[in-house]
Image (cartoon, rainbow, N blue to C red; front, side, top):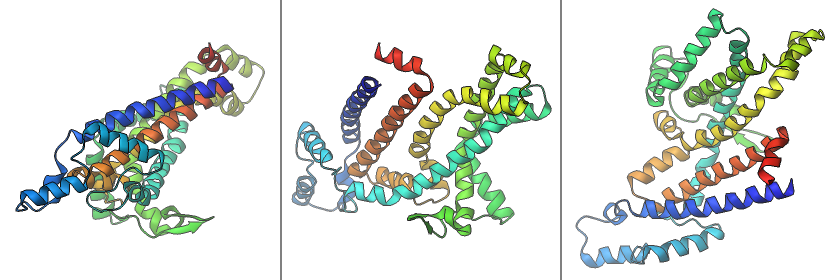
Length: 324
């Protein structure tokens, strides 16, 4: 097991290094931030001074080397626009994005697994067909369009929920979040549901497919033949086995929830990392873009590592195959 974890960890470090190279070079090839930062009427001396101050006069290989050295010390560069460390600006926005992603994931799990299992157990019922039709809609509808419709219906037409902002924050066990207040919950529900819709559909389809496959296995028939109750067969024998692929997907989907929350945060004016990165791209604020992408890559790599290790515990054949 130690060798398996060590090998996966080294692979993760290598992926981080390669991605840092690709991200840094890719971002530095797009546009010229000097054009966005100085007055169009500035003279050549002023332009050269700004380029020198930002370190853009150095070869890109030298810039990357300094970025790599500073990154090991926890410094991912200073924002061209705000003049503050990019990591600090992102960390300030991170709790709002994590809170939104976690609440979205909770919605996907709480509703997705029971609905998927029901659709798998009773595939020909009208309710199951409705569930599966709904999951197709969840895959098909664009996130920004669903967000606008939710705002128009629940905020503008019915007036039940606020359309923008994070709402009042509360503190519980040292953690500050909007989910600890009624006002905060009313603000997070619409953006979280909008962000969860695609993931909810994925969990439903995975749970249904797993249920249809597992329910025909001999050990399920044997459990029923022994006279075990249907609830015990489902909760113990069926759920345990369908959770393996779902754990994998949920782990990876959490990373994508954070990475792709930019559209939802923009539509609902949610003050998270996604809104910051949109502004940084608009202003060609390279340090923030690079820092954001590296944090997202780090989250994805870490989640993959955790999922691989968890998966190896649930299914020892994976560990044995990986060590071979």
